[in-house]
Image (cartoon, rainbow, N blue to C red; front, side):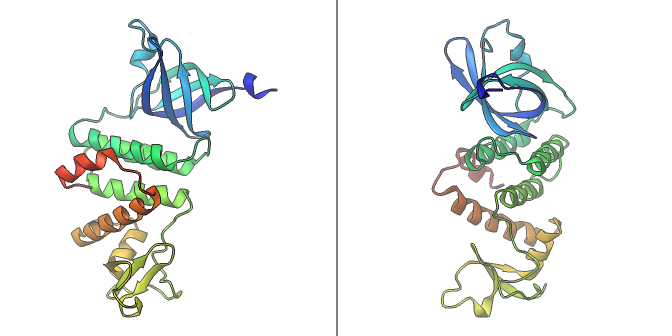
Length: 242
């Protein structure tokens, strides 16, 4: 079967972003569980009476069908599945931050089922009023791992076990280096062994762990974004939450 005639049905997905295409249609950026991030043409979605207007909702689980080949495929059908309360207030802003990370870092049509599940879990937690900062850190860690930039947290760069009471410098592409071995200037981001072990266990109950983890993830994401600016970060700087 040619790529142009390929059709997919019953795909689990979330809407990441939408923008106008012609007077009546939209291009929608979707994150799907089994097909990765992809762009779809939603014909007629901007018409006042389009059934899609009440279905293509951000932060809500959807089931999609599409057809076609090339970079932009054509949406055939969309169904709202529900199950996640609508985000509001700060949780809504944090949801946009997750979406922006996926749009800027996730390659097109590269499936990441585990990351999809982590995204869904983060949205569910945010919608239920969970501690937002901890949810962000869990998702960011999962995102880096799925992209091949996973953090080494329980062993240091020399292969030794990370010690809870020790101080380390976390160096990009190398990992945790004992502070006394980090060299002149202490290259890397300073943090405690306890923070590294807490991160490995996804335990962010300690305020110091949460603070040091936030600095580490910001440092790593800035590096892997390669100079791209996160628009949502400007809002979060004011809120002092990211």
